[in-house]
Image (cartoon, rainbow, N blue to C red; front, side, top):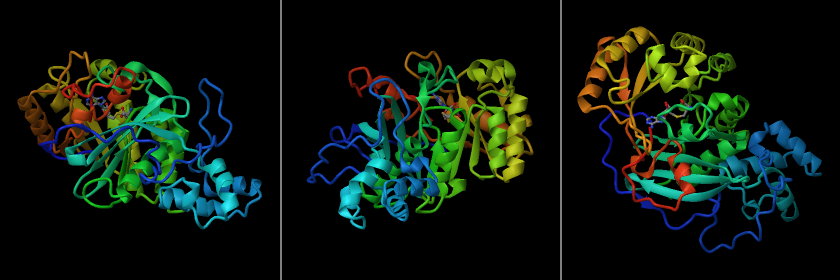
Length: 415
Ligand code: SAH
């Protein structure tokens, strides 16, 4: 997600052809849809409940146990896992190495379709793709694929909605609907991998190289599922997708006990801390959880994470005009971070609809960067990929219930 400014000039927004059914393993145009994507495991009849069990929720041993419970040889768990994590398919008819009679029961038990593509948006000449997903119980979440010359980053959601209530973030306004399961998180990445493998993204076939937990939700408030998802994403096929741990970034408002717990896992994923203010007085309002864990405690936890993992921590700072972009705040931030294993990622604010706040003036942004650098702190300014398709922060999900109107391309949240 982070790149040096200036942001590339994006192509105009475009809605990709029609509603895309079931992006995860969507069939080639001609092939008939499965009679009915059979309900994979008991689903609650209305109301919210747990998503159906999926192989990406389980370590390989757990998948073997499920397979054995169906009277199948346990190695079928690896075969199914290879289809999902290596070939990005959940369609029984594409699993020619499985006996015909076993395909449907196995797929129903371990590969239920968790996410349905509700809407697809593209910009940057098709290299930024945003998907709005509907979950089994009707919750809406979104993911964004961003292809750069040297990498492909998937920005994923960890929760439907968010309970952290940061006033500048669109997702924060609506509150928390529910946690996503590990498989619901992984399925977003697999869907992106499938698009790339199918050649749907300009630039030829490719792989997902990076995953950032910067979509909807607070990942460390959904700790167990996020951790399981990280394991699935980073373990080699057939256990998981084989993405490098260092290429996975978990972004948090600063839940101190969870940061400490994450450090103890020694997973060496990248930690990003959404600081947004160097002083408690302002941070109490911009990131309300700061009333519980103060700037000093959050940074202590971050330095603990850096010490344990050897990984440089990313300090996220949305620059908001006349709110947190003062030169003195840059100096204060610089002195907090000087000499630490950290770099600052400045995010020009993407105003949410109705917000009185906007991005900093260019001169203020330049001065902010200059002062941080004067303290010896490395700084990048994030590009604003996907701005015109509401590239982040729950805007698409938030607007989905309203009649589809993609014309208001100037209003966008995003990172
Ligand atoms: N809950 C996590 C991850 C979600 S958002 C966290 O807070 O870190 C990822 C980043 O986008 C966070 O740094 C968040 O503060 C930032 N962000 C949210 N809304 C934004 C907006 N309107 N403009 C710019 N950045 C925003």
